[in-house]
Length: 170
Image 1 (tube, rainbow, N blue to C red):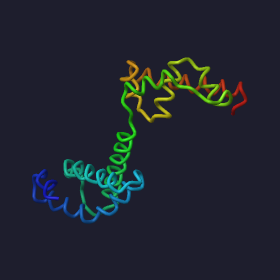
Image 2: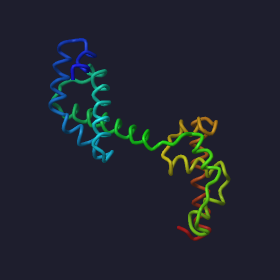
Image 3: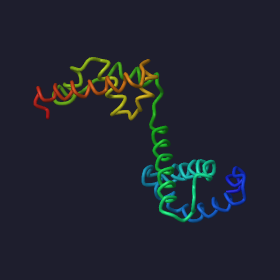
Image 4: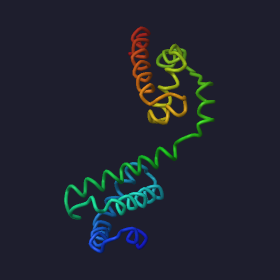
């Protein structure tokens, strides 16, 4: 806790941070654990959140208020989600190789419809919905703009829906 307090300039903000720490530490751990389902990862997410809170302590009005509770819960959940994504992310090279060699064991259903999509559509859909990448990250991997990724994803979903309806999958 001393490390966080050293990051804060004013004595008033230090006092506010201590109060927040003691009041919300259990809630922060609970929220992080709900996302991560792992004790060590939840503790890491809480530590990351405490750094963010100490840097933005000036944005917090009263330590004991519903608005502060919501702010802290949001920071912890976002930190936990970021940590979860980081742990589940594969290297870009391995992923691009994997995408080039995607095989579906089923000759029916969604797999068949996915195989009928153009390769670009299929890659964007798999990166976005199967691997959990964001548009900005997909854009970097596929050398596209984030706006273009969003358009391709929308077109791919529309085309996949049409193919699934045609094949009576949905």
